[in-house]
Amino acid sequence: MAAGVAVRDLVSAEAAATEDAGRLAPDGGVSPADPDAGWTQRMVDAAWCYMTPSNYEAQVTRDAGSRRWHVMVVPAGACTQNVFGGGGVYEIDADSFEILHRVPSE
Image (cartoon, rainbow, N blue to C red; front, side, top):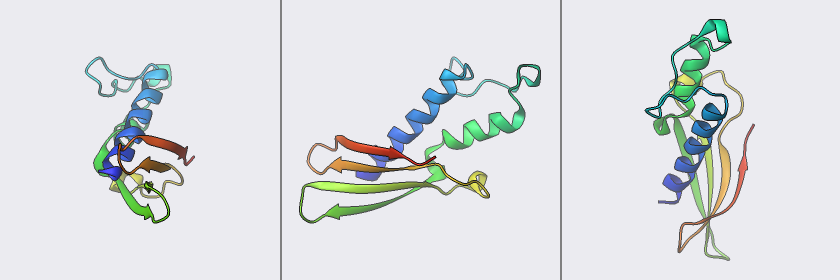
């Protein structure tokens, strides 16, 4: 469950970044390529890649001294090969599954 909370948060952040760039489609997907506006097909593919939960792996450990999960989320999909960065590290409450701390990996 802690892994799902972290991955969902990360994918939501990716969608928000796509929206901030003005490239989130009304249906929540990614707008089609528009090379004249600087939005190439490669950028479309990357946005889809990072907004797809199955393109991540999560490593979960329990902090024995507290009621917290430590979750490291890393890009692991075929579309993320040869890409450096991405993912994040999360600290999640073991009872409520509230995100207590997050550090995105750039």
